[in-house]
Structure formats: structure tokens, C-alpha cells
Image (cartoon, rainbow, N blue to C red):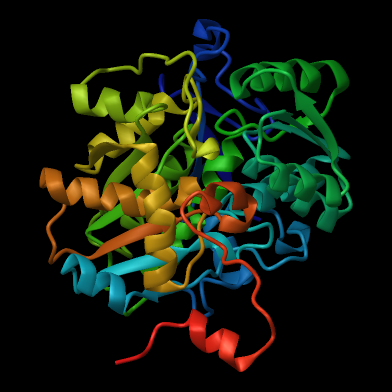
Length: 414
């Protein structure tokens, strides 16, 4: 059993695992409705391995040494993580970046990085004896919870803005979750889920509010750092909404640095849409806190949030890494879907394709050098939002089933 304490990311107070469940009770007094979560807790493992496990980091037994678990037997029986780190010859040529890589997290069971967090949250729910888990989400976190809860035999209740892409709603309903479309935005669904978990005694999976969401997402950093082909990244480009994925990556690299398994952490570069960019704007302005953006909107629905819930930790960790933030337009995001697919074979939803748009913006601003080792976090499959991708492609009309029709359609080859 891994021993650990929970440390407040603001006041640094320490708590035993069973003293608190979600956030620091002292710092939580400063919580404002709809604002960034106060008193987010971090997991501090009592011991970390001093050498890389003999097993691959894609195997639960290897990851367990870095996670706050009593036993790997509580992990849902699905293959979460272990996603490929892809060499990208065509993309490298396009950008003149010989050491550019893509971390393809579209390969997770529900099709997104959020499975990493949900896997650990479901495991802890089993440890603690809960039978129901609730979450508010723009779509992917709810889908991930629905998927992993189904695999573990637990009940999932998911509160999602009714405007979420239909594919995500269908996916989570297919897993058997109690789907509750909310006539409001993500921030309102988040507040409702907090009230529901308190009223009904459900375990809450909300991003950052539950400390194990950050801990679960750090596994991507462990996999990236363990890949001998890369030799450790200089920069990781991360799409950001609430700021939990980037915080999870930061936590993973920090744990490895503390264990002496990597010499230093990479710079973390977050990417946000212009219509929902509170974190990136705060980083670019040198502000100590984010300014909420009521009415936030973007084609990248997974990144739309008025007040990023993990803002305090995300800003701190990105700055500590020497990284920064970039803003990209919806047009650039839509263009990036096809460019990424044609160059790598990875079909990404808008939020995930934003990583490629962000890399291009960062190169233009001089935030990334072309000879650096750069990893793009591609966080969700394009099958979650076909309508967005369809805005940049034309599906041809049907032709008669004849060779002459085919010949007339296809351009001559030279």
C-alpha cells in the first residue's frame, strides 16, 4: 500500500488521507461561487521509486509505485494509458522540427486523456466503499467517468451542459451513466454537482476538487519521460481548460525529478482558445490570478470554462517550469484538425488539435525553438465532435459504380 499525505496547494497544510476528502478546509473558506477552486490538494507520496520499474510504464504494476493506491486490483479492467508517443516525419518536415513528437491519448478507452483521472478516481471510490460517483463536465470527463465506472460496476451520474456535442452525450449514455443535461454552462453544472454530492453522499470526481484527478493525469508524464527514444522533452504543449491536465503533467515530472529519475522538468506551454483563455491571458500578463470570462465560448468545447477550476496550481506550475501560454483562434483550431490528421494519422477533436495550432503560435512568438524536443499532447479523438471536423472538409457526392465514373472523378497522376 502506498502511503501518502494530502498537501494544500495554497497554505501547504498537510492532512491524512481520511482527514479530508476533497479540498483544504481552511483555504476553502475563501471559495467564491463559480470561481477557481480554493485549497486544491496535492498527493505527496511517502516514497517514490529510485529507479525505473522493470515493467513497462504502460502496465498497472509499474504505475502503482507512483500512485496512491492500496492495490492495483481496484483499478477498472480496461487498458488506460500506455498510449503511443509517435514520431511524426511529415509534421517534422512541415515545421522544420526534427524532434517533434505526438502523445496520442485518443487511444484511451473512452477516447480522451480524462480516462487517466477517472481510472484512479474509480479505484479510490472502490477503496472508500462508494457505489455512486458524480461529475460535472463539458463532455470528456463525464464520458471517461461513465466508461470507467461501467467497467468497475459503479453508478455514474454526469451533469453536462446540454450544448455538449451529441456524440459525447450518446457515448456517456451508452455506458449506462445517469446523464443529466443541464440548461446552463459548465460552471453552473459544476456547482450543482457539488451540492448533489453533499446532499446524496455521492463521491465527487470533479476536476481539481477531487485531488486524485490531478494524480491520475500525471501518468502521461511518467510515460513520456520513460520513453528512451525521446531522452526527456524540453517542451510539452498542452491544451488547457480547467488547468488540471497541465497540473497533472507538472506533478508527474516533479515526482520524477524528486525521485532522481529525470534531471529537470520540461517547460509546459498551455494553449487556449481566444474565446476562453483566462489561464493564458493571466500568464501573458504576469497576473497573480485569472480574470473570469463570463460568456466564454469556442469551437473547442472541452476547453470552454469561464473560471478555470485549477487556476492557482496551473499558473504556479507553468511559471515554475519556465513555460507560458498562447491563444489561438477557432479558425486556427479547425484548420489544425485536418493538418494533424493528414500529417500523423491522428484524428483529433478541436480541443486536442489546439495543441498543433498552439505550437505554430508559439513558434511565431519565439516561445519554442525548432531544434528542441517537443511533445504535443493530443487529448481527445475527433470522433467526439464530427460536426466540427466537417466544417473543414467536403464529402463528395456519390458516383455511378463504373470505372469511367471513377476515372472522371480522379485527377491524373504525374
